Length: 80
Image 1 (cartoon, rainbow, N blue to C red):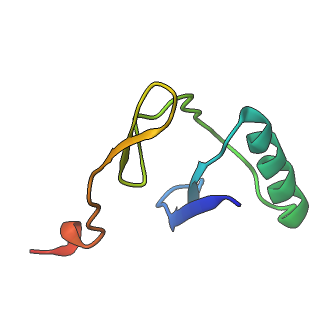
Image 2 (image 1 turned 90 degrees about the vertical axis):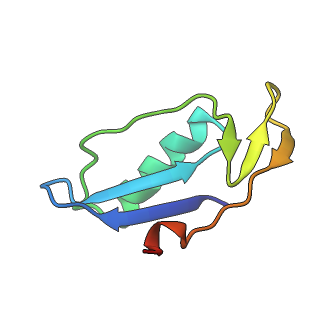
Image 3 (image 1 turned 90 degrees about the horizontal axis):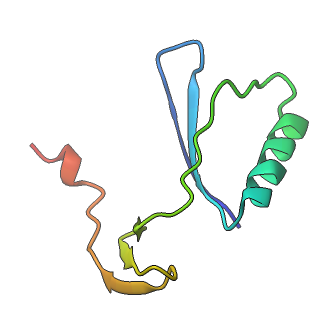
């Protein structure tokens, strides 16, 4: 299962994806699946983060285990 987030971008590369994967191999599988399902799509750039210290509101230790939770408020940026 992959969690993904996408939003339109004002440029010739008009879609950005942010995905959380368990391994580099899963990235290759995802790109192959995108190419198969959407043959007109073109990957113009990609960035890979090998280790994150925070995932979905959880602070992680060096082994990737959750050590504490930081509440996430998805609507905070919308409040004026």
